Image 1 (cartoon, rainbow, N blue to C red):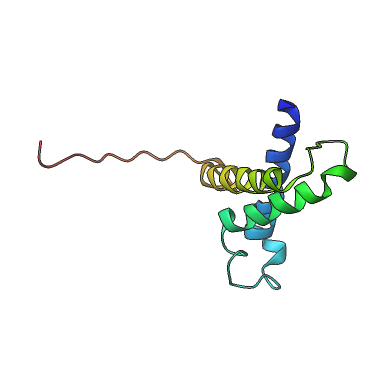
Image 2: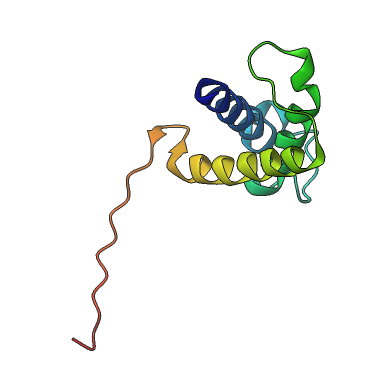
Length: 103
C-alpha cells in the first residue's frame, strides 16, 4: 500500500509539474487557475488519477467518494510541497536570515 501511495504522489506531481510549468505547453496553456497553480492542478490531477486507478496496475484504491476526495487532497498538498522544493535546477535550497528586532 505504501508503494502505491508513493507511485500516486510521484505521478501526480509529474503530471502537475508538466501541466503548470512545462514550456512545451506555454502557447496553449490558459492563464487561469488551475493552469497556473500547482495546488489547484494537483487536486484535479489527483481526482483524475483516482478515477483511472481501476485501469492501472501501479496503484488501486477502494472506489468511493471519500477516497476520491482524500486522494485529490493528497495530490494537491504533495504537488504544492514538491513544487516548492524542486525546480528546474534541482532541489531548491534557500537560506533566510531573519532576526527579530525586538530582541
